[in-house]
Length: 367
Image (tube, rainbow, N blue to C red; front, side, top):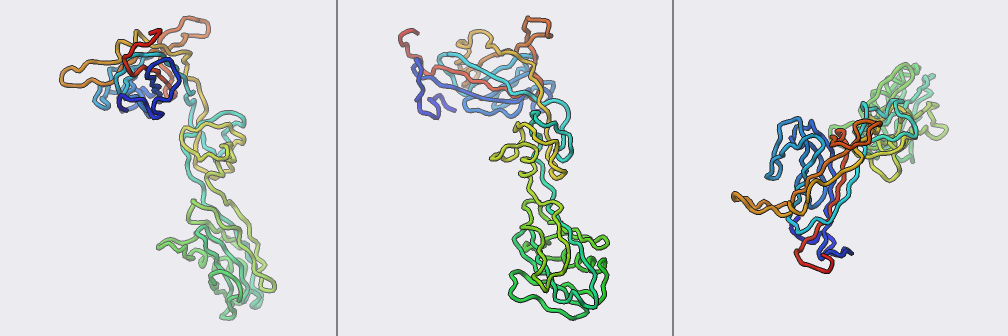
């Protein structure tokens, strides 16, 4: 950001002549290999934030991390300013403990959690329980099967060469050949083979994977991106198969997160916090969370007179643009001690800072 009034064009009610509010947030990460002591710096008007690092201190945007001692930070602004008018800060609690999978029962309802990984959901699936053919009883009988790609398949039976697809039924007719007198297991096996070869409409991609065990066919979508259009529907009488159809799972990753407590209207994203309303999603999403912890910091102070470091002079061929502000993080050493000492925030704490500065060196009343 250039030495300017900001995105609101200077419409800021203040006794200052040209007040500019600079804000940022970042995650404390002393072990990060980037050598900055932090990660994920966000916010306009802030060039760098440097904190203590156990890695080799590194440069960012032309400036080397001086590797402040634990408990301190150097804030570098994008531009030079005339006056430091004040600031405020806050913490977002870091995480605590190990990551927890939402597809187990590891969450405690009503407790806060932070999303570590949005994960992905299990693909939708259903079961089809077949019946035996009795002297050609399944000939011409059919049922509708819906996939996750928008297809509707009409699976109809041809028994020892006898049978015809149904008329006046919407969908793509697909024959299933069996022998007269086939057992329920033999019907399931033949049906599973046909279902596993149904085309999704995408080159090289089938609609389902399918397996048969005794008289039960388990049908699973080949994509977890969308649910099935619905459970399979038996044909109209008198051409109904008599099969039993049941959904095993048919949802989305968003629905899984909403099951464990993510509020409606939010898409699961790393760093989101929510209160759990269930201990797990039923075993479907690979998403993970982590419990909330504490930063350990009670206050943040600016060290020295920040007005004296807001406008570095050009030296050594460098413009040296970017005012500097030094801060310290304070906390008591124990619950029985009231004296505050510089203390490193817990790693993964999110720090938010705002600085109010004056953009122009024009004297007004009271200055």
